[in-house]
View 1 (cartoon, helix red, strand yellow):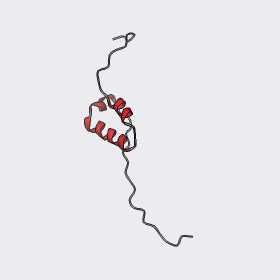
View 2: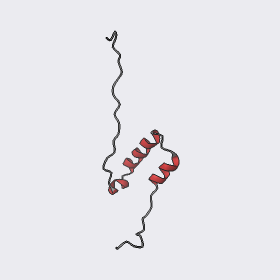
View 3: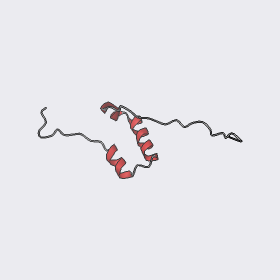
Length: 65
């Protein structure tokens, strides 16, 4: 059936990010690696800016404190 064998090479390792918590958002190394992964995957600049912008959230008018 096969007349020859091909060497394909080593499999690629991929980063998998699961269960990222609110506390992880403060981890600069994690966030930079996630951003780079998304850039390499072709996510556009505007979407990345929206996803990685930071600031203080304000409670909603109807939220009980």
